[in-house]
Amino acid sequence: MDYVSPFDERRRVAEPLAPRPASLEGKCVALLDITKRRGDEFLDRIEERLRSRGAVTFRVVKEIFSKPASPEIVRQIADRGDLAVEGLAD
Amino acid sequence: MIPDTLTAAPEFSLPSVAGGSVRLADLHAGGPALLLFVSEECPTCVLTLRRLAPIVSQLDSAGVRVAALFEDPLEVAARVARRTGFDGSVLSEPSPYEVSGAYGLQSLPTAVLVDRDGRQAGRVVGWDSEGLEALLSVPVTHEAPTRKPGCAAKNTYDAESLRALDGAGAFDELEDMFELGWTDGLPVIPPTRSRVEAMLGGRDPDAFLGEMPPAMARVTLERVAACAVLAGCRPEYFPVVLAAVQAVLEPAFNVGGQAVTTQPVGQVVVVNGPVRETIGLNGGVGALGPGWRPNMTIGRALRLVISLTGGGFPGRLDRSALGQPGKVGLCFAEDEEVSPWEPLHVTRGFPADRSVVTVFGADAPLSISDHRSMGPDELARVLGEAAAATWSPTWWPLGGTSLFVICPEHARSFAEWGWNKQQVREAIFEAARRPAGSLRWGETTPLVLAAPDDQVIGKWSSPDDIVLVVAGGEAGRFSAVFGPCLGMNAEVISKEVPWTT
Image 1 (cartoon, rainbow over the protein chains, first blue to last red):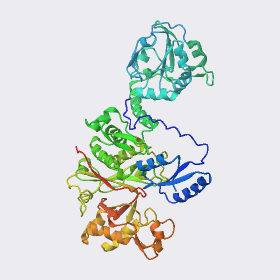
Image 2 (spheres, rainbow over the protein chains, first blue to last red; image 1 turned 90 degrees about the vertical axis):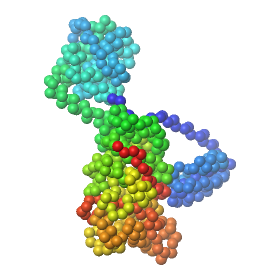
Image 3 (cartoon, each protein chain N blue to C red; image 1 turned 60 degrees about the horizontal axis):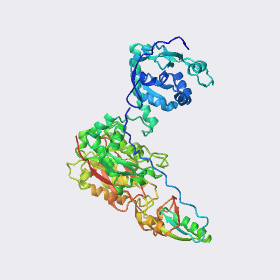
Image 4 (tube, each protein chain N blue to C red; image 1 turned 30 degrees about the vertical axis):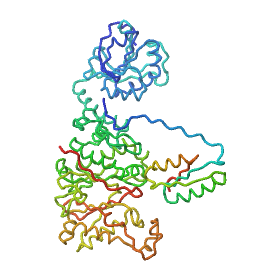
């Protein structure tokens, strides 16, 4: 029987993970705060730990957690960061 | 096994799951052919297909073409082949099974080996490990049962039994939808090409409407039509479904956030204007519940576009902790004729004679009973106090829009007391205001935490966050409020219905 699919049948190919760094020494880490409550506290602690291992950090903040990050935020992370940590949910 | 049957194998031409037809001559052109007469309804047939599936390719490389001749419709044959892993030719023999009759079948399964000259070289009836091994000259599994009888072949049925079986086929088509996952858990109407074309009414199937999160799937007119068919819509409902899809695709609605959140958010569709009457959409007794096909199927079609096409399926990318019945779909008409006030679409800037859908990202409805209030302030207070508990009794302000469905008796009372819609909204707003000090328990908002004890905080930021529509039965003083979804910046969106039939 010839059914019409409700789905977008395009096949998606998973993006490969970026290579993992051997050390955090001297790396620049973007800390993405999605504005979920207490996400900033979580990132504060992560920031402490990263700095103690020689990384430098910078914060980027999403306008609202329930929408995708704006292209501007993605660009900031890509331009400045070697790595990124996102604080998800609450 | 019957070894002395070197009679000519009757020729046939039967439709194939792979498309087109296959003739016996095609099958034994390069060597012998093995014909497996089977049916979905016969457990021994299913066992035979499953057990022979692993050796089909072995037989094929030995020059033996294997074909399963199903005494079932094509889609059933395809399904059984898929489930059993059988990847030989899959053919469907229509009722009244003349090919089976020509082969003199008494029961299924029957395996008939046809040699390269088109003669019947042997046959095995039922599952018989030794018999099949001798017939095929390849190892066949000897796991128990090594012998198993089958069922009567359908060519032996009388006409009345055949008619009963034809009815059963329609149910299998519904089961196909469950197997494919093209459902919200309820039975659906299979979206055959002819049904989808009827839904489209000649419109461009590839017309692009937008990308539906979370899968960022391309939403085309054809996919919306497929969902409308699945949901059970009639073609005349389709423009309403389409307007609702266009509304949720507006970025300001943030359907992506709504589709994946742990909140119990559904999408409520309110319809205004002449299309309500054209399609029979209910805004009267039982408007928020079951009983009316347009109400049930339009809301469901929208939800299928979100959950199937868009990938926001419960338990997968939709992480709603509890869900709620409104996530099946919720669509109703405003009863403009009974309402003493301006209809919703007019308030939202559309001419009264246009048909418009308005979508809300909303929680489940909370019923509000009041059969005793003696004045408008009292009734508005009942509505406001009830809504004060939505989301959480301590989450003030909500930061979203609440939809009140005012029943005709409540609406009539307000009108008789001389109150217009705006006065009702303002009174509801005023009824749900509290000193911050009384709200500092449980989970509350940063605003409440930071405010002095005596600062008065409202359940809503302004009366503009309160929307009123009139619907429901003429008797019974039961109104309802839908709380909003939060953290989405989700706006209420209205779209004109693009055509009516």
